[in-house]
Length: 388
Image (cartoon, rainbow, N blue to C red; front, top):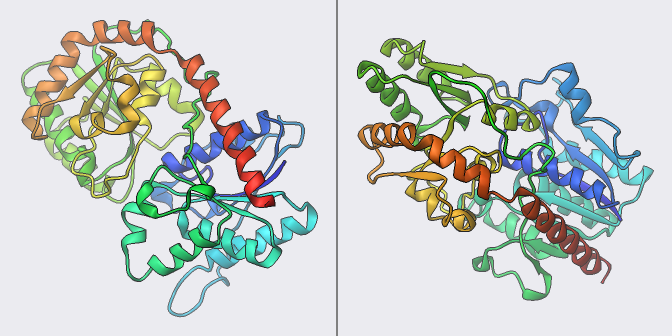
């Protein structure tokens, strides 16, 4: 089938961008033609992936016999109005309509209410092409709860021919509800690998920094471990508005030799970063969006690296398939600097054992095959609903 995908995409950083990137490629591998409409070239610097010319070529390559096409809106100083704003929805809508004139798709697929699903709904109403909506955790946990936005998003959900969701509380009729995304991690990139490095124990962490990400507790923990003479370091692929404050705090604590901060890197380079570390950290705690389902812990385990994580993440449904594996460690409640220091010490003591279990028990091939089956089934049903 022909799919018009209106979503986030690299060089936008983050989980939704990553999932939309891999999804577009999986759909091509399944034999579909995909045109991605995005605003990725307009992403702000604090959320932008650092991409080389080779990375750009990879992201936009034509390795699917012309099945994949990426079209992004562009920054234009004339695209402004008063009160100040950037007409992203209008730009996405126009870009989509122009592509439809060239190659009319069978379905329109969007993920993330704002601005992508709003634009998708408009294009669907203009053209009569069925619209399939998928949402993220923040859509349901934050944006949909806002009285200033709720009615528009309910319109999008009602207008859609199909909704990919695992949330019963949305009230989507059974006949147009499709189970949510598979979270495909291609084994070409995400597979267990040994690492011959030795010496200082290296923790890895990546993603946005922030109050609920454990970032500030982490630099305090690094400082305490350094004062105790414990030989460890942290490599952090970090970004976001709070990063300057973290850099300042790390300089004040004098942990420059223990903390190396790297720029956001492309989704396909994350596996190499993971395997360069002895263990990974995921410290999300008291996150304001209950529905948030980050995939970072699964990415770490899929690359054969144990992970130190909070009980909040361990208790999420996303992690249930891994709870029986002895390849992670939990940080004691309540989450604080002291419990994090204790958890990091434990991971250093047991890291080799956990890593051995991870390398032995993670069946990435079976997960990939299951993901392919789910996505193929999802989009076959979506097409039938759009044609009905």
